[in-house]
Image 1 (cartoon, one colour):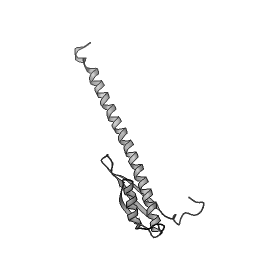
Image 2 (spheres, rainbow, N blue to C red):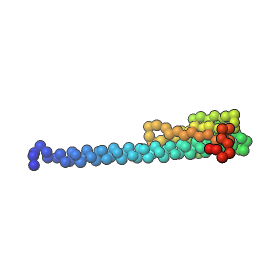
Image 3 (cartoon, one colour):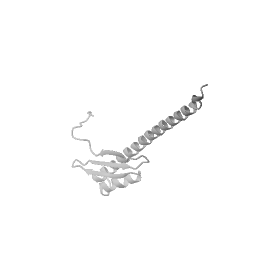
Image 4 (spheres, helix red, strand yellow):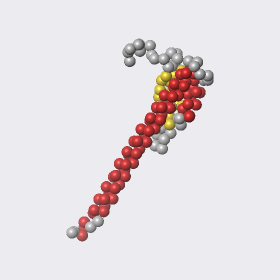
Length: 121
């Protein structure tokens, strides 16, 4: 064995361990981002549905305040709430994650648009 190559396997093994740890961290980060996106989408959907019920008079309260309350129950913050003339509500929510960015979700609830007819998607 050549004296200049002693310990080369150790350096290679340490390098491979570092690469595996980096890949594992990336996969865990992507998984965490996917979970946060699903939570944000769920919070947006439920907030929009609750706000639409209030906007149509099916429940008592201010539609956007109800949307904010429902979002808060799901760990989200209401970013935007828009009441449309067709009795629909559009909401946007965000969820803070351990990642360096917010996860956002948007949803619309209310009657279907006029362009959608029976039997047509």
